[in-house]
Structure formats: structure tokens, C-alpha cells
Length: 115
Image (cartoon, rainbow, N blue to C red; front, side):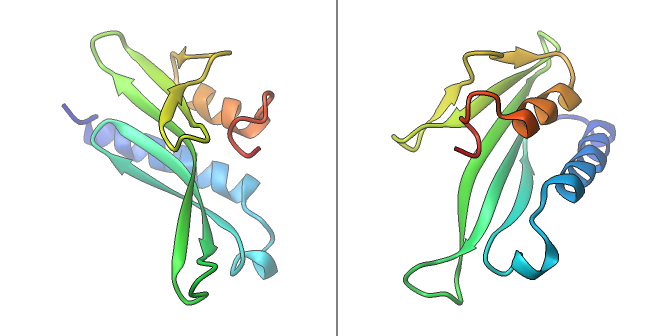
């Protein structure tokens, strides 16, 4: 079951704030930028870069993902490992509030999200 329309709007508001604070300067954004997508009950943050094969094409590089588990009222936190699969984030595998997820990504204490 997807998260509610109200929750989606709240997440989008927080994600816009996150992007404003963490995006690269405007003059660099053609080379690297941040984006997000909300699918079902998951939110994914990714980098957007030109493809090395064709600079006119954009490539998305996964940064972080969270999935809302309604029955437990928690957000599960994931990071993409070298095997290109999502893995639970060991220091904080789940958080209570979406804002806590964004704080974890911003701080990136273990260099899992942005390397």
C-alpha cells in the first residue's frame, strides 16, 4: 500500500528543503546534481550526471532509499553497495520520522551514501 497523499506532500516539502541545502552550486549542476523519486511507499535520492558514453544522456546514481512500513510506523533506511543492491543501513536501519532519514543522508557519518 502506497503512503497517503498527505504524507507524499510532506515528504516532497522536506525533500525540496534537503535539495536546496545540499545541491551543488548552479554553475556545476550540468555536471552533477541531485534528484529524488517517490514510488509506492519508497523514496529514493540519486545523483544525476551526464553519461560518459553520451554526454547528452543523463545517468542516475543511487544515493539513499527509505521505505515506509505502515504496520510498524517506521522508515527503513537503505544504501546502495558495490553490488548495486540496496542494503540496510547498519548504524540506523530504521527511523521513526522521514526527517531523521534526511538527516542521516546529509550527515553521511559512515560515507555510505555519498562515498
